Image (cartoon, rainbow over all chains, first blue to last red; front, side, top):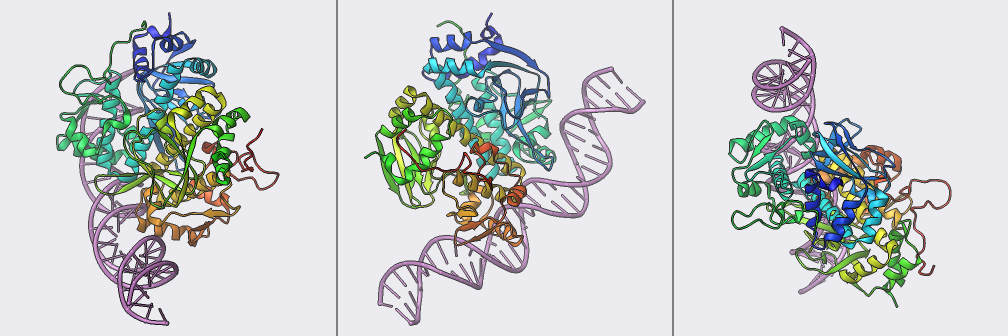
Length: 264
Length: 264
DNA sequence: CGACACATTGAGATTAGTCAAAGCATGTGG
DNA sequence: CCACATGCTTTGACTAATCTCAATGTGTCG
């Protein structure tokens, strides 16, 4: 049975479907690709650092992070991967990964041979567009993080990140209406936000104390998403995700998850 | 006569040629595309912000910057474009640009209709790969900036940026062996580096005082590139640029500029 | 009961920001 | 040639955000 029949494959298929031209033929192309599904333990390696890994890795379940450790020993996480994200999309065009990607939780990962995915993308326009669209969105996210690290305060940055994560998780059906499971430790959050763990702790307390968030045992609750978004200057457009779950009324918004169907 | 015969088109063609599979047919495809060349004045708009600009804009000459102004009025520049860079490559897959791009100097810009470029890229594998390769490199640069803003000091960040700019300029033949023309004001540098202009001033003075750089009248001189790279923790690999001009001996390194030839 | 991983708290140090003024070219009009 | 405006750089004094170091708390697990 194809990897695509796994329940957790829905996250990736949902992401691909966000691309307007992604149709049944494209779905079949990716579905029929030979793929290797594996479980990566917490702290395990999702994408090895350095040259020559000829596979493209997609996180189906769990969280992973691109990580760079500097000479000083400090670490920066320039990208977070949640279910449905392609962890080394750059490897389609650049030899090897600049940084490694590690699992922040136990993860399920599918890997495709680069050349086979490349062939499928060449044959199927919709698949190609969907993958490059994901690459463009990842780039837009990196740009946002750059803006945040350059010009936003610790508090704004934190609020912004939490809003972004909600929207991304919501788009693949991994958020509840009022929040989501946030598996990161404060130290990992610090490495994302360019802060120290101590300061993350104080920042989270500040957000809690004014009621913008609740966070306990790695469960984040956002009482009022609009307020938190205002605090962080968050505008969801860059995620190209539908409305990021902002819609309160009406039927399922376009960005919202739908069950993965493999047929047409 | 085609836009590609302009002397300044060499920067863009050089970049495309860095992609291994880019051949004469691909060159012809891009060369024959209808394109609109224009001059953008200092502070003028290279890519308008917001929805619906159906053109892809390439900087042939001059410097431009993607710019985002926050609610507080502060500005962050998450990307710099030098000759040969595609200023809105994301527009191939996402509707409209998240941010505008402004000219930091008088610029020459070629613009292609998105659909026409898209068609050419669909027909020509080498062109497609070359463009997406550029996109991947832009993404890698954004990642580097994120790391720098998150975990490097003002001084390291500044050194790193100057090294990066040297390598990028060198790759398109826009650097002299010992430095390059740096048209940015200290305020613009501050918006790139996530600092204030005052602090940039002091940081530059610090780098000057230890002899790592000389900078006067917008001409930057780097007496010893290795030292500056060490100061900023700069490693050129992420630019995928050949050796970034590091080579001292031997013939022209692969990343170095060569005259633009239009024929095979 | 440790051992461990993570969260929390306190106190002092440092980096970078803020505000304000002065210096220094360059260009313009008279 | 001067008077003045403009845009950028430089300097000084003070403030604020964030880091550092070190300790304590808390829950889970064997």
